[in-house]
Image 1 (spheres, helix red, strand yellow):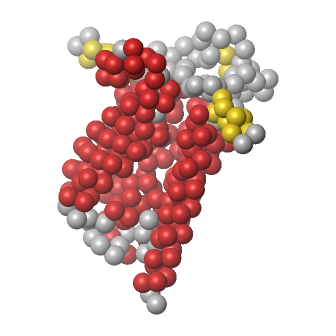
Image 2 (cartoon, rainbow, N blue to C red):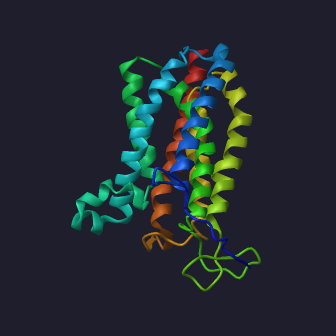
Image 3 (cartoon, one colour):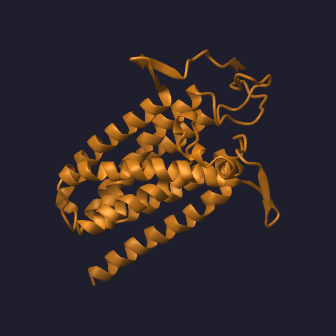
Length: 270
C-alpha cells in the first residue's frame, strides 16, 4: 500500500499563468503525434496505394486539436455531467476545470479530420491507420496526467500496490497507470508490430480497426477496477459502467473495419 505522492497539478507558471500537467500532456501528445505520423508516412510511403504529402499532417493537426477539445469536452458534459451543463451552459467552456471524455474526443477528431481529408481528396483509411498507430502514445501522456491530478482513480482494493489518494482513507487501484500501460504502451507495441505487415499487404484501414478493438477491450476490462464516473447500469443481466457501455460498440465497429479492409484487398487482387 502506498500514499499518493504530493504532486502539484500545476507544473509551473508563465507570467502568473498556471501551466498544468494536464495541458502539458496534451501538448506532448500532439507534438509526438505529429513527429511520428510524418515519420511513418515517409518510411512506409512505398507501400501505400495513395501518397500523402507530410504538409497535410501539419495542417490536419489543427483540425484534430479542435475536434478533440470540442468533442472531448462536449462528450464529458453530455455523458458524465449533463445536469451541470443544463444548469450552467457556460461550464462547457471551462476546460481548465478538467473533464474530457475519450469517446467524445475520438468522435470529434474523426469528424474534424474527415472534413479535411474529404476537402483535399486524401485517402481516409491510410491516414486513419497512421494516426491510429501513434494515438496510444498520446493516451499514455494523458493517463499519466490523470494520475498526477489524482483523478479517475480505481476502486477500493487490498492489493499491495493500492494507493491512498487525497481525500480518501482506503487504498485504491491506480487505474490511471493501468490505462497508461494497456491503452498506451501495450497498444503502441502491438500496432507498431502489425503496421509493416498491414502496409505491405495494403490492408488499409486495418490498423484503424485494430485500434478500436484493442482500446475497447483494454478500457472494458480496466473499468472493472476503475471507480465509475457516473454510476453503473444493468444491461442484459450484467452490471456495466457507462464507460463500458460506450466502449462495447467500439469493439464491434473495429472488427467490422478490419474484416472490411481485408475483404476489399482480397477483392482488389482477384
